[in-house]
Image (cartoon, rainbow, N blue to C red; front, top):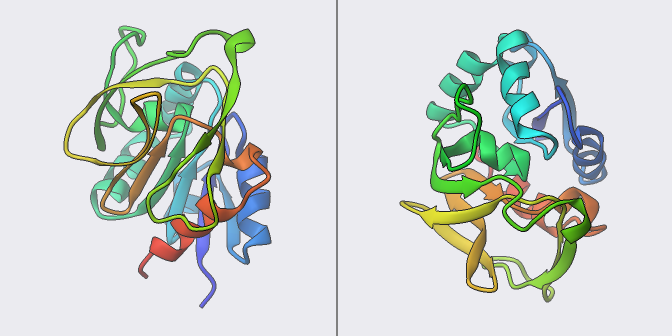
Length: 192
């Protein structure tokens, strides 16, 4: 059975995620409206600009359907800004920013610094074979508090990949790494 995987396509690196998933054989749906979300087995929330994505969730009328779907068990891979959308707490968010609270983490936007402070790091990821994974950190959020989630990878003692049930959250950009193993790991975790 071919998995139908949605990629939130409001802003950010959605094309790169869609390409990675398609290379792995998924049927990819770019999600911009609620009816597109209703037709998928899983969703990817890409990196981008979290405050813009937060506003676009409302204008596209996707916030409530996405929240309901995630709380009903929709599998999700959230990267960078996507992780910020799913966090329980955004420590330096706008006053009107409303994270969905699906992952019990507190994050700081651009926690590793500005664009010029972007970097790559070799990450040991629990459940991923084949050596370290190339973590691409671009204006990445920093997880400053971890609650009821499993930490699958860390960098310098800070969690950078977490999981709660079938929801994964990464502070880095696996879609830019040139390595499909994390997307494949996510796909293999989905039960339909």
